[in-house]
Image: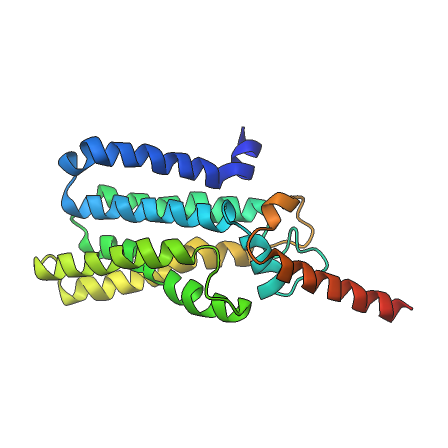
Length: 229
């Protein structure tokens, strides 16, 4: 069961998104406070973000390993591998997004959850597009059309209703940065392993920007062949 979950966690996240859509549509907006509603929608936006990166159009592993880190020897398992992605996208990210839903009175924690999503904007909207020489990359759509509006609305709502102090915003910004680092940066630092037994399949590896990634691999193999001869 763990193996199935590890290989398909983003699709399970998509199913969870559908379930939450029905819950929020029929009961959620009545049962939850408005802050909780925003945070649930923020979590749902992250679920779609993950599907976009790893499911459809997908290709985030090859974009990260090959195009960004220029790994051409073992790009199917370094630095990102399926186990690392499973851990940081499910266990750490889900925890970071779900816990604040149960503590809506801790406004700084709610702000940290939504502000962390805004850090996706420079990552997907600027740096990754520059690397790909493209106006789109897997994850940009959900960042721009879902996470950005939710982040702006969260700031607007707590500000206009006097729900947050200046200190709450400071703690929220710090919490968002720390949370982002703990969810994504730290697992990559600790769990990357050139000898990992976990490898992406061709289908998991490639998606958007496949031609560019494969061209880098072909050029690297050609250079290696020439140097050996």
